[in-house]
Length: 298
Ligand code: SAH
Image 1 (cartoon, rainbow, N blue to C red):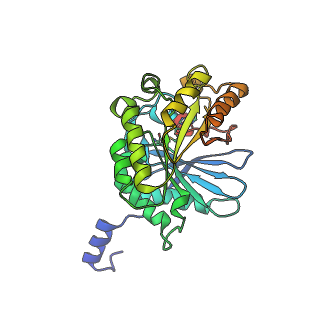
Image 2: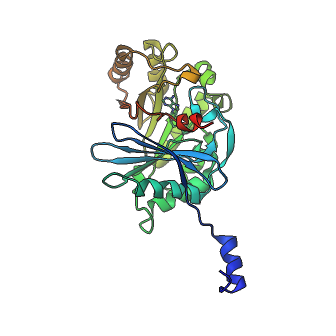
Image 3: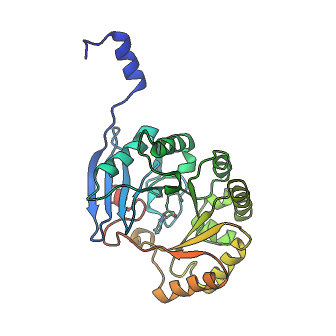
């Protein structure tokens, strides 16, 4: 637009960008779950998902292109890490999800797509403030969830923010040896230090932490593993366990246990006084587990 003064054009170029996600693929499940694969302006791919439920619609978004943390049950790590998403790109995912609902309103946002949100701290927190702002998406802080593989410095930083957002920690095993086998990050931030950090977080924020626990057949789903989990968490004041039957990923030889085993595990926690829920599997007929759709386009 050469009719604009040169200094204005320069400051527009320097300070603003026109984003816009291009849809590279879309998979829709019969249960209403819709998974979008987006192409960014530099051709990198990220995923986001709309998950409608009875009284809520959750948007699940990515925070990074790929992931550095290499959890061996997760398809997101397979292509390695490329880069952080900018604040604008994260907000663009939310906007796209909001504009592409079949019906209803986007009520919740979870950072459970590709990437580790606490490894892209500034951009994620800055995006969250706008997702929360009445001037932008106006989604309540308590309806925004950060999910982390357990980055202790990030959790410590988060507890100082004074935000009412939800924190989920991907635990998946209650002893170091087992957890390190599937989550290399556990070598850097082992369980004792992680749980100590959780105590401090709860003390300071008075907010509950949800521990995500994927049940993987033949690995962490027996009753002894449930007992170990009870021991690890029993002293935490505000904690909840969310059990997730593993989403099968043939490439990684990951499969869920039998329904009987899942229920035994859940009962063991419940009977030991642990607040426990079993996540309903959604999008089972599409590639809805982290990184799966992007993997197909690898
Ligand atoms: N890096 C963050 C957020 C992304 S993963 C984290 O680790 O929490 C979001 C959730 O999906 C995590 O709990 C992750 O462990 C889980 N997930 C990854 N692969 C999965 C699979 N195959 N089946 C079920 N859940 C999976």
